[in-house]
Length: 113
Length: 111
Image 1 (cartoon, rainbow over the protein chains, first blue to last red):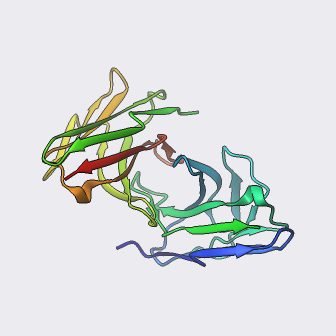
Image 2 (tube, rainbow over the protein chains, first blue to last red):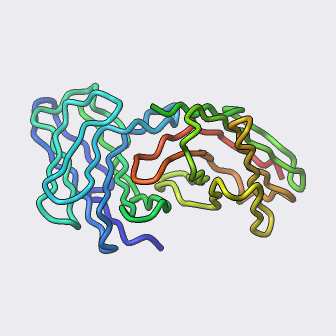
């Protein structure tokens, strides 16, 4: 069982609202990731981090921002939500030192109305 | 960067039959190839992985094969059961780098 948690699991919010999706892991992993998963299933990397104070944009352009102030915490923020942000957001983490698996959280399903 | 292609996008099999999902990758430096299973409403979970120094790996009813020369790897599920129905993702990565995922295969096992 992976020790990586995302909250909330489901969120319905109005256009223009600011939201933060939470992701925490207790495995001491250096690397953390945010993926956006579209209805066609494909996983798109939107942000990643190699450690504290390190954040990078992924392959898919996103209006969201992330921060990594603590090893275990990697929140994603949308300053002004739009219907186009409606999607499933998945957080993951992995070890830096070894080429090992990524552990995924359960995901947050976001609906912007 | 790496490009991972996955086929087929959907697959239906009768219970008890075998299922095969194939992936190709472009970066010869990739050396780690995990396979993930995603059930409805959940995040992907690792089911099996293989490293580039190994050609085949088995775990009960699932197996993965890797052909480094051709840059392709495959997932084989034998004696399929309804609980195998899910979306499966292949991925490739190199040491210290991010994971590159395939586009997913939706597997349906018909009882």
